[in-house]
Image (cartoon, rainbow, N blue to C red; front, top):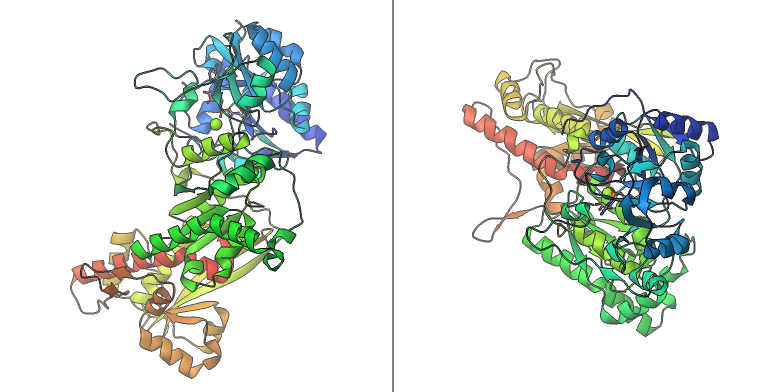
Amino acid sequence: MNRNRIYERTVLADRTDHEGIKDCASHLVSGEVIGFPTETVYGLGANAYDADAVKKIFEAKGRPSDNPLICHIADKSQIADCVSEITPTAQKLIDSFMPGPITVIMKKSGRIPDEVTAGLDTVGIRMPSNETANEFLRECGVPVAAPSANLSGSPSPTTAMHVMNDMNGCVYGIIDGGECLYGLESTVVDCTGEIPVVLRPGAVTPAMIEDVCGSVETAGKLQEGQTPRSPGMKYRHYAPKASVEIMDLPQKAVIINDELESEYVPSEDKSYLDFKKLDDDAKQDLVDIAAPFIFRIREILKDSPATRIGIYAGDEVCSLVDKLGDKIISAHTETYAYGRSLDVAAASHFLFDGLRHLDLQDVGIILAQGFGGKGLSQAYMNRLSKACGKGGDVPEGAEMTSDERFSDIEDFDGTYTCSVLFVCDDNKRLSSACEGIFTDLIRSRAPFRLRDDKSIGCELYCESAGLKAGSDEELDPEMVATVRETCGINISHYRTRRTDPSVFDANDIIFTLRDEQAYEIISRFPELDGKVYSLSSYCAGKGLVFKSEDGRTASISIPNPKGQNHATYVHTASALKAWLELIFPYVLKDLGIERC
Ligand code: TXA
Ligand code: MG
């Protein structure tokens, strides 16, 4: 699907900016697309009465148009214009759960164009309980057709920043209402028949619906060739780039968790992390929850030591992983802690943010806490299973590549700079190639920010120099040509430079191509110990070694191609590229920065 940036800048209106919200509403009525908050996830809205405006939503999302959209309203009196029949079941759910995280499917009226419902004769109606959503929808005055505001195939957005990352330049405006309360999309219920059918689980649970209606059904898995009742069910939604594995809760914890299920309430109180105060039973319970994670991390790293692992778990589990004090595990894991381990409301609230965050840390696999309760746990597990790819195939062309994502918002409170240096002998081949390749990686993965203070942006630089290099000489033309040919990177304008104390001082990490060069630097400047590594010692320190077929560990080896044939140059450039791509996320972590 062709997706173009059509606005130089997308307008961002804060929830207290009532004029900005009005402006977004009037642009929506006249045909523009607007991102807006709700209590579930952010939506991408257009005037539901305007077929052309609705088509723009699909262009912005990169989503095929055979998936129907939900109509959002500010007032129950708007329902009559959108539907042709309100069954008694529908009426009960409207009375009991609206406004709130539920979408009620009814027969549609003639005013709702086919573009909204993807040709179905039914339409989903939803009245959000979020105050900002209500203000915006009231200003719009028309029903607002909206799917979740993510790019097709990526996790639903739960902050305005997520929407900005996916949609900057593709929509007129975004309203920032802060974090969404639930973090999971609404419960979708088909109310066209006598018995309500839950098509998508959400915070309004089947038990709650049964209480009100007397009975409830849950849509089962699709049989082959069957048309889905909720067309969205056939797509793989909520998918991060990494693969996702669910770590089961021990049975005892499932029972506790079922009793605890509630709405998400933010809390600063982390006293439960004071493990010393726990009695032996509580300690054992905690170890039982953390054990599947630790066991699986060890297993993955044993099979493939170069895997980066993301962990989506509770504070206690993440803290236990840290407490292991295992350097290899901590080098290879990125944790995202959502709150108390057994708090499924917190796990749901942060799920999509966690998946997006871990993806940006370039992890290959995410181990996520599973839940076993019968309420909100079902909605949480439904989204997590879809993130594991168990929700069906991704339709061709529906997923965007990472190049098409936009992440150029630079409204940081301050900036910080850091820099990496590559050193070889003459600075004509290896270190210059590293500089070119690493600079290219920096450009393709920017922007960055501090891990400990996300409001501070970070500019990352890279340079190279040689211990025995002359000054201002041209590089080896064969190396220049090979880097262009194998990596698509131009380093023809680089000139050689000799290392000196000020160059060492200006850089935060110094990599040498061979071990002897690192020894030489440290023996001359002992104060640099701790920031100088040969590429192979750096990789070995992180456990980044490969096993050859005979089971022996092979560490990094990069031939110096000087005076060799072209094939050796190509091998050198490709090996450097592979190793630098591999260590890039570890370097970010060591520098205390991350992608944003
Ligand atoms: O919480 C939510 O529902 C969010 C916020 C923005 O309101 N919206 C949302 O929209 O999740 P979307 O498009 O990402 O998911 C809507 C789901 C899809 O699975 C779609 O197939 C289903 O609802 N749906 C919509 N209209 C339907 C209809 N007439 N019949 C059956 N399923 C329908
Ligand atoms: Mg969606």
